[in-house]
Length: 218
Image 1 (cartoon, rainbow, N blue to C red):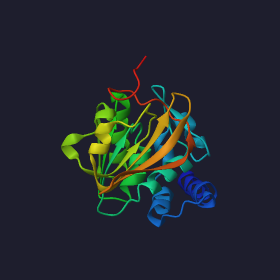
Image 2 (image 1 turned 90 degrees about the vertical axis):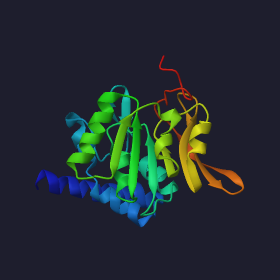
Image 3 (image 1 turned 135 degrees about the vertical axis):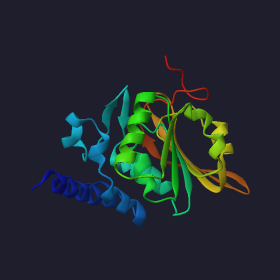
Image 4 (image 1 turned 30 degrees about the vertical axis):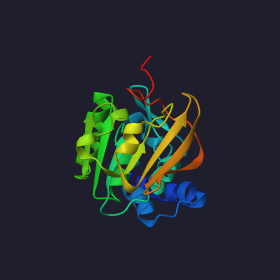
């Protein structure tokens, strides 16, 4: 079996065993996970582990999250074809790439320049022309491109940055891990005319969100 056929088979198994069997139902999200080659977003020496049920290191002290957690977060955003999304802590670009298959446009913010460049290159090489990654402090969001129909935060914050709530469109959702540096609760916060509704999605463990409204880099 060729490498590409082998990876395709592994993607199918990942979708069935790790996503569908755990309750991920959003049709377009599942299709995106089938199509996006996760192995292209990890280091070459990790490619044989790319479709495993765990996070993987991508350098610079950062990780690519476990597939199920990425799927849980993206499904919670309730993505639709015309949506404009923001991802914070884009890393090598995998979650942004998956999200881009379900919405109109994805903006990504990554603090580490090397990873931001790599993430954009990964998406460009795969023809995902609706992904735009920049270097910046994710805790400040991207005011020039706001409001967003959804904001995905792929790093752990000590509390929810107010500026991100302000950049949410009416009806939009923010999905963010909040807690200590070592253990967090995944929150979905939806904006409505009545304010912000919070929903807990379970315990998670992410790398720290570093920035003005996040953790210090020390």
